[in-house]
Image 1: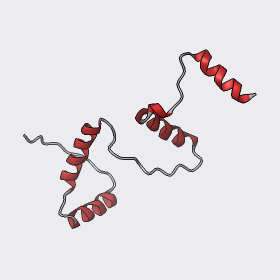
Image 2: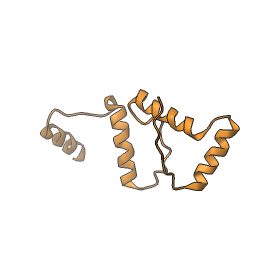
Image 3: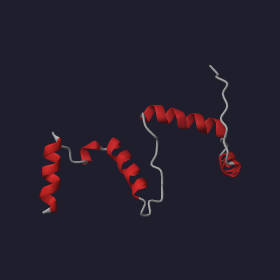
Image 4: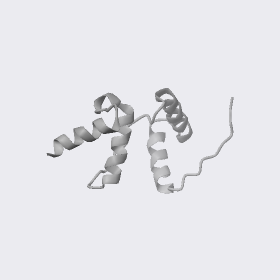
Length: 94
C-alpha cells in the first residue's frame, strides 16, 4: 500500500550531500526515510543517539539528561516522597 505524502526539507545543501552519499551506496533518500521511521516504531524511540555538542549550556545538558533518564531509569536515584528527596539533598549539602 502506498501513501502519497511530501516532506519539505529546508536545507538544500544538507539534502544534496545526503543524497550523494546515499546514491554512492545504491540507496535513495525516500527508502532511508522510511527505514528511519520503521526503526522509530520498532524502538518506540529515536533510533540512535544524537551527537550534540554540549559545551556549557545547562539547557542542552538537561535535555540530554532527560533523554537518558527516559531510556535508562534504573541508573537514576528515585524517591518515594518529596520529603525523602529533600532530606537526601540536604544531607549532602552539610
